Amino acid sequence: MINSANRSSQSGTATTDLDWEKIRNDFPILKLKVDGKPLVYLDNAASSQMPQPVIDRLVRYQTTEHANVNRAVHYLSEVATQEYHRARCKLQQFINAGEDREIIFTSGTTDAINLVMHGYGRKFIKAGDEIILTTMEHHSNIVPWQMLASEKGAKIRVVPINDQGELEFDEYEKLFNEHTKFVGLIHVSNALGTINPIKRMIDLAHRYSVPVLIDGAQAAPHLTIDVQALDCDFYVFSAHKLCGPTGVGMLYGKAALLEAMQPFKGGGDMIASVTFEKTIYNTLPHKFEAGTPPIAAAIGFGAAIDYLTEIGIERIAAYETTLLEYATMRLNEISGVKIIGTAAEKTAAISFTMDGIHPHDIGTILNQDGIAVRTGHHCAQPVMQRFNVPATSRASFAFYNKKSEIDVLVAGIKTVQKVFL
Amino acid sequence: MMHTNSLYQEVILDHNRKPRNYGKLEHPSHHAVGHNPLCGDRLDISLQLNEHDQINAIAFQGESCAICKASASMMTAAVKGKSRSDAETLIDEFRDLATGKLNTESPHHLGRLTVFSGIRDLPTRVKCAVLPWHTLHAALNSLDNASTEAEQDPVQIVTDNTSSA
Ligand SMILES: Cc1ncc(COP(=O)(O)O)c(C=O)c1O
Image (tube, rainbow over all chains, first blue to last red; front, side, top):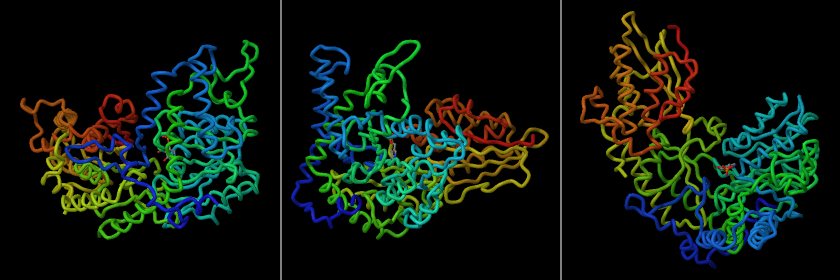
């Protein structure tokens, strides 16, 4: 099963067999100094950094392969089309999709969710229908559904979370009835780090014949994803959280569902033929890729997937778990610091609050020591409301972080406490 | 980049610890709530204008960072007893200070509020310092829709307001 087997040291994957320091050296940006201090980049959940091989791939594409795709018969167009297609196939393998046409390039997670809202939701959801979401969703998996609900007269039902920041499965089960028509579910919470038991949740929804969209933006960088084993109907994530470029992401959808859906955007490439009387839409995946796609970014996405796969997502997860455990221990030792989100299953992200000190002030003072953390509501205001805090600070780790950086963070937090003493 | 310590000066830390005019007026003539959508901070300002258009009472409350709270605290102290138009002048000057547009060499009325001048080097924090001033402006003008206001402002702040004036 997805949630347990692929992460943490229990899986038995040795983390010492890799030279993590050498891997870190692949990331040129990590050599930066901020205000004279070495950069300590702990904002990986917002966006991760790009290694040299991916940067090189972008340069190679731009210097020797660029043209528009799916159009001309000339050499460069063929190369670009082929490389763009290869990137799609890499994603297909990465998440073990059955077919490459089930992978749609989008501009990101948000765009992918909006595609499903328009393509599936606007066609199949009607007045009186119910959509189940969770308290933990990122705004990108709330707002599109609210827009749909208000347009159609549908209703949003919300799965609550407990004090540890875990979904309440029993409550989830109780939300189902004959009106339930869609479930939107975050795989890993960006605000709390919680890994949700999505397989069980998908199975339950399927017992009611309800399709499920999984927001995997925070899961794909840390967990092995197998969409066929999960049997999810839609799975979405962005490249920029996987060491890839911004401006590209992907939607996986079961072919039958994608076929049944209406297009999201109209334009070139998504059509088979156009007359003013009638337009026939193109086949998958092109039906959902109107206009010139982010070709360079998609190819960079493919290179990032190669890079991560070569290290191995399981090794990455096991190493990150050692960082999570160490950071959790060190932060728990500081009195006045409270960790928000203490689920049993977590990725390496820690949200915390400090007594009497606002996260924005924490972030500004940590920045003085070169430490980059995220402060704010993390686009998850319902989570903040649930824990009764306006905002948190979040340190989120990647496989290129090291324990000594956690020590710098701890020292920085003590400086913050001194300023506000 | 500025050294952050020059921002977290003792005056600011002191107003953060012991905010002046904290709370809510029982019967305000003007009231507005400002939001900083970036961090979710929220600031409530209520004030009483007398028949000479002077602010004879003002209070603020809300969840906010030290910069915002200190700015609100010092602002309420600065505008109390001032006429509406003097308060508006201060609002303009403070906004200019925070965005680096004010020439602090030429005459202005900000006095000790210039401790916030360092904020101009931290663009992400400008909003925190300006939120109270923007909210005061909204309250004084009883704008029913502050989104146009947000366009003119360097700071995107959403305000709801109510006013009995
Ligand atoms: C869980 C989750 N969903 C969705 C998103 C939105 O991703 P993007 O901004 O790349 O569309 C994010 C990014 O912050 C996220 O963490």
